[in-house]
Length: 204
Image (cartoon, rainbow, N blue to C red; front, side, top):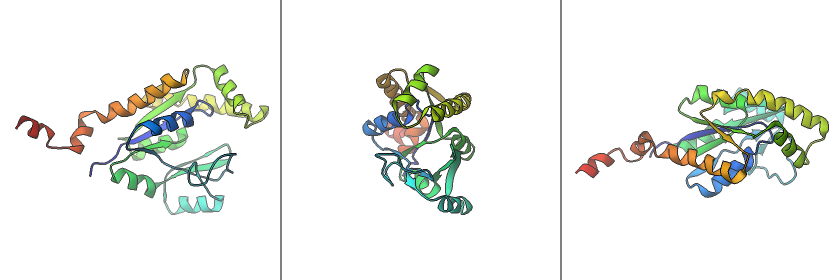
């Protein structure tokens, strides 16, 4: 069975990454998003096993010690990481997998899996990013300030990614993200991996 493609998607907090990924997963077949492990507490509406695998820090440290994580990073005082077994199993089944992760984790993945495709979601302006963080109504002013400071550091990592998607208009940005994934599937090596004898059969 052909190996699935790994897509890595990162963004500063508030850029709309999670919403764009959800919209893409909903309409692109044979594509899943890997559910990360985290030590942070669930936010209102989040479900364990669907949004994240919520674990204690001791359990997360055990995953690190046993080399069970594909990548991991510490963000705003909490750990986030991706199960190695889960990602490898999905790829082995020919399923394309999105890793929706921090830039630190993305750097690790580029080193481990250089064939992965990396995509960075950007806000159109600083003011738009701050407005989105305020509109989420999840953080007070001091935390928003710290998230903005961290966002600037995150945006500095954008040059290391293969593609940029500027999320100014959500519908347009969603189409851009889908087009990157779909067009990558049409590359010759991707089609050849699924049907190595296609040209021979076509030419008779």
